[in-house]
Length: 365
Image (cartoon, rainbow, N blue to C red; front, side, top):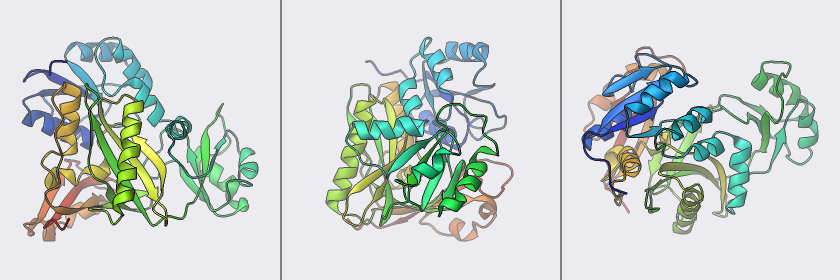
């Protein structure tokens, strides 16, 4: 494929902070951007060349959007797969609607990991409240009940520490009596792990895969707090993690990015947790510590430009700026090793991602 020329327009489904950073990366490479999403005055809308504010199921608006762009990508995996499928008939969508469909459904995601030979924590599908007790006989508590779709940053999750908590956990994720048909949730056992890591793989239109090295992630209340590179894992574990991400990207025929989150067990083996075919919160460290960051690599992939070695130039820790912490950045503004990225959101509130800070140190290995 010939790469899209400068001034071509990249359509982005979703207009949040990841879309914002994709727009900025595209601009550096000479591309225009058109973002599409339901929210006005959004982070991406503030910096995009053009924007459409419309619902994802508005086919008239989607068709008009497709006429203005040369390729379409997305910034988060909860864009309805139907929207991506509709656009796929009109314009190239990268990554594909299939990748989106697998990543946004935890059952399909777990089946996918099994198909590529990657282990996961023990789990069972849950279609109704009454399924939980039986599932707890094999998925021993403590466990976590997660909605199969549309869960992120801890939303749609409830911990079950004993069988007595099963009913309350169901109410917590469903809002009460179930009106759902089919499999609504999965029950996953807690696992004994020493750390959480993630690998971001980029795959080009020619099938070449380039991976960023694993980041070591710390979460609180199901949200990422810090991502640190290099991760404190063995070379063998790092190689295994990169191999899993590479196999996943190739099997899904990703064009763009695929982030895979994993648990590292005490023996160094890996359990896969989740994946997302898009730029990832745990990859923000690449913006200041690498020759090419995750956002530029994604733009390179979807436009047909060559992928490049994303060599790390420094050690780094990303600190997420959550809620009112956006008003407490004085020490970071005064630190020459701190690189601040704010998302243009007007009102901080508990749990809202307002930005991130990358703290650089000299490279140690």
